[in-house]
Image (cartoon, rainbow, N blue to C red):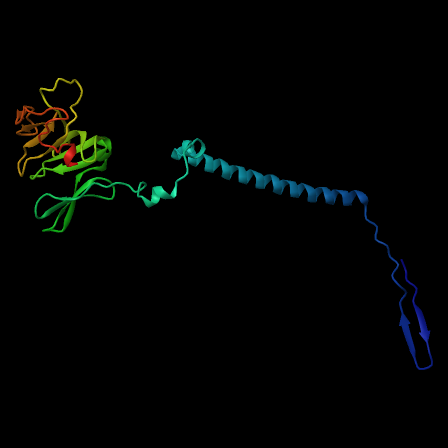
Length: 249
């Protein structure tokens, strides 16, 4: 295509002027539709890819929760809301076993993991006395160590009777042999374990004082099941030996 060039010449000189460009650009409609289809296809692929990534993330979270065993707690948990009085009155505070001095230099306390530990003040060293597995297995409410630290007397399955009176099961734990010995009266007429009113180590010895059915018994050693009866006058709700009656509670 040729353009015509015009020349304007005046008196003092001349100037050249090009005519306006009248060239037209024509685009094929099919090519335009193809470009639009490509853009839309790219957007759909991005959306599908994003949805797949989100699905994989959700599936991973659900799998992790299931493997950790929290599905029942998260999906099927049915409880009630905590009320303020429960917090203020300390009902939600975990109960800890009371510490005690076994000797003037050895101090027994409940460790952070729930087991029993012993502190030797002479060397400032701490050793595990009873593991938390044993404490949780028996649901221990109280304990007493023998003076030689060979045995621990556990009180568990406590059933309260009045303000200061209760019955409970007692178990002797052999620390060295990791062995449990339930405390029960040999002459008891019950087939099940004997619920005792009280049991404790006798002084600095390995003998055990036992109170059951309002009477006092003595066991010379944890390995001996023979009981020596100290009193025989106990009567339910009338005569109490070894434990206070209702009046002194």
